[in-house]
Length: 246
Image (cartoon, rainbow, N blue to C red; front, side, top):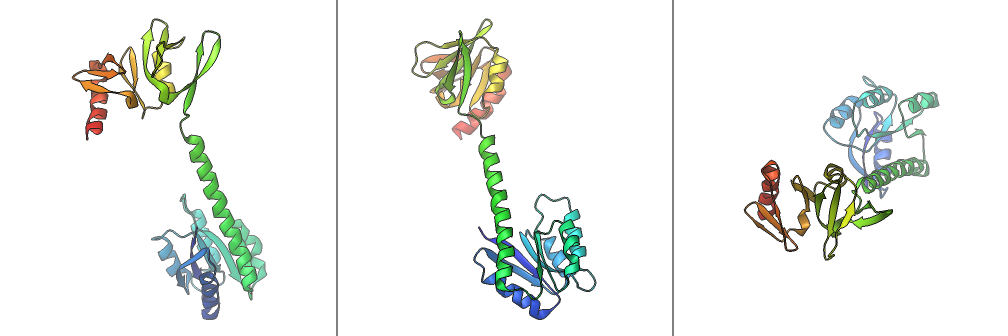
């Protein structure tokens, strides 16, 4: 992972030094550099940036003012800021705009690297959290069904189709001669199952789309069993079928 950076400083030597430090740091990528905050703001409005190395005292628009503008934006991806300045009185104000760090000029590459590593770790942790969230958001691969007096773990991929049976439902498993009988409703089963894999095709049937063997007119065949597609569910099924055939 490389962090996309810009450097902003009205002092040419300081700007060149920060740019050089960025370029020699393996996990940073220098996308642009500016000698004033107004040009930097225009660039930020058009480009996604991860990290800004920002001087504070600049004419027209100061670094702190630019940071407040960025902090006030209603954006999911705001760049993080590392301030650089010759004056230490801005440290508390810098943290108020959620700056990651504060480099006091003149600073060494070691100090620069320490601050940059903090930024890298921030984005690495953010990426891990997002990855963990996506993993947790994945639909489960199984469900538990109450069968008689026990809870039975059933793998979704093994369910061929589900059939209404009075106050119960029959869960037919691929390759198994006898269905599981559980006291629940078809509506509850439909809500429990992932819609990208299961479809209700009749008030009495929910099918696993992966288990369809053949389709003929208003009927699907799963494991030798013909299941009717009723008019109420025909449009959804035809939409799936067009994607399947396509």
